[in-house]
Structure formats: structure tokens, C-alpha cells
Length: 123
Image (cartoon, rainbow, N blue to C red; front, side):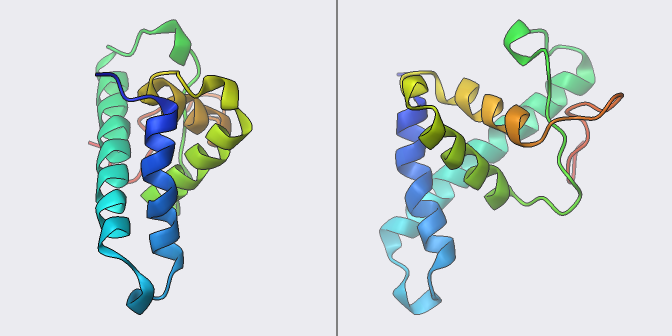
């Protein structure tokens, strides 16, 4: 089964709510969604960075890449994705990995000479 943009958005929105709440008002379900969302998105970012550095990232969909400022945290990626998904409802059936990466490309464009290997803790 392929996870869609809509599926990932459904998981990541409660994750962001979890982060915005006071600790005593957080729910276990929101915590589970946070782990699922961050696990998925961090896995995608790590994989893309590794493939890019190795020269294996050749999909034309990702002709452009993303570059994170040093202060960027995984929750920032998730916020960017949720905002992108809300602004692009016609992409709800798109595979989540594609939608997530397109959101990063839109939110964190690279300057000349930069690539996906510019990220916190990149290998």
C-alpha cells in the first residue's frame, strides 16, 4: 500500500498539535502520531540526502533539491509539508514521499551550488 499525501497529512497534523500543547494536555494518540510522522519524514530526508550524495538521485521530479538552514528542525519540515498539503489539495492522492519532497523543495530552495547534502547531521 502506498501512503498518500492525505495519509501523511492525517498523521502529521496531530503531531504538530502535540508539539504546540502544554505537556499535561498532550494525548497518547498525538504522541504516537508524532513518532509516526517524524519517523517517516526523517527517513525520507535521510534517504534522499544519502542518494543525492551518492549520485543516485536521478528522478526528474526532483530536478531541484532542498537545502535546510542550520537552525531547521524536523518539526519545521513537517510544518512545511502540512502547509503545502493544505495549499495543494489536488495532490492528496500523490504518493506521500513525492508530496513531502515537493514541499521541501518549495519551502527550502537551494542557492547556486547547494544540494540536498546540506542538512543537519547529514552523513
